Image (cartoon, rainbow, N blue to C red; front, top):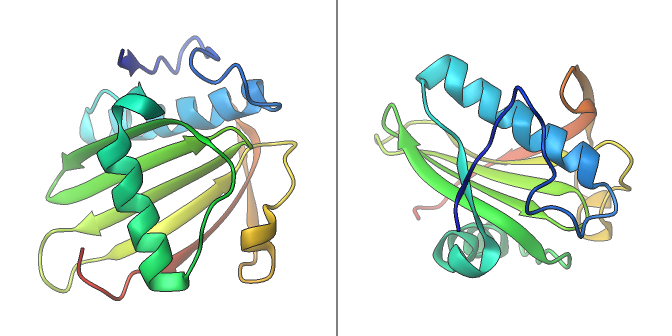
Length: 154
């Protein structure tokens, strides 16, 4: 069942099995607020079991571009399009959030972003390849993030 993320009242719905559920919920709410404010888009997530195509697309890009396999189980995912940009998010039990920004126009920006919920360790599969910058968020506390540019066509 899909869930429209409310950034005014942060809830751990769908994320309860995460050891950093509160921080991950804040991270998810932070993304919801961004898309509502910038694009007037309601950020709606689905349980991983109902969003397998989105998860497969994100995991396929990770595997093809960087030979990355995420070991934490996905809890939720979403995919949508705003302003000619295809977006996908996967939220993992570990507290990791991965997003893919894929501009549909040729030559547009295409990237994979990683965000770590406050309190989680850097996943082993990312630790040696990425440096994480910190930013503060009222909803999510300290967010650590990194990214890479997508070179292929997906």
